[in-house]
Length: 243
Image (cartoon, rainbow, N blue to C red; front, side):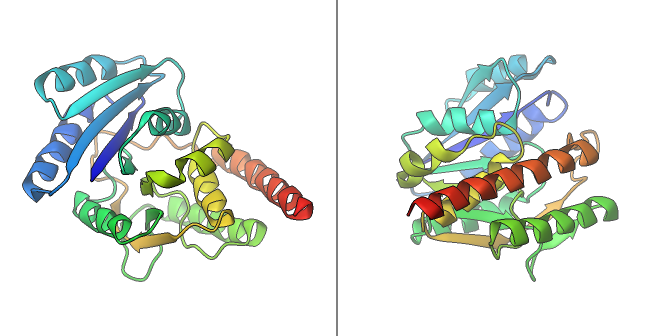
């Protein structure tokens, strides 16, 4: 069994080296009985992220990097997922807001037959440290998306997901967004295509690394998410009517 781990990096010079090394050391410590590899995808950056990624890759044969001129988390993940030939594909936000202790749980569920597994900040056993405003806006989006997209999941946007690569050819081609909405499309299309999905509670801390702040623009992204959610609903309805 093989697993590729994607770490998208958009202007992450402050935490890229420290968090990549932390991930490498954690994986070595686990002594996994399968092969793994980390890929840093530097996308649209204008800081020293690429230089740092090259340095890490040069000093560790378990790490590779690639550069995309355009930004967008979804673009970075899709680019690497298309190229991945591993059995499982995992992507995590480089701020490691989700504790690495949940990575073995994610992998275990994939190994137990789930096609898509992701972390949730809103399940009963989830542990979350987040400012009230962002927590409230996340709740509102989740309620809105449940109504519009007819799902019963608690958290679509957590940047901690694992995928069985056998679903790549059917799901990846349907995902259009190159930014944050990528996560919603991934889950909803996987549900629509009747794959085996599971969300797991995680320990998520917004300020796990004080020197790096979130790149989410609440008001701008909220408007975009509303539009894209409604547009996705229209696409799903069209497919349903054709059937």
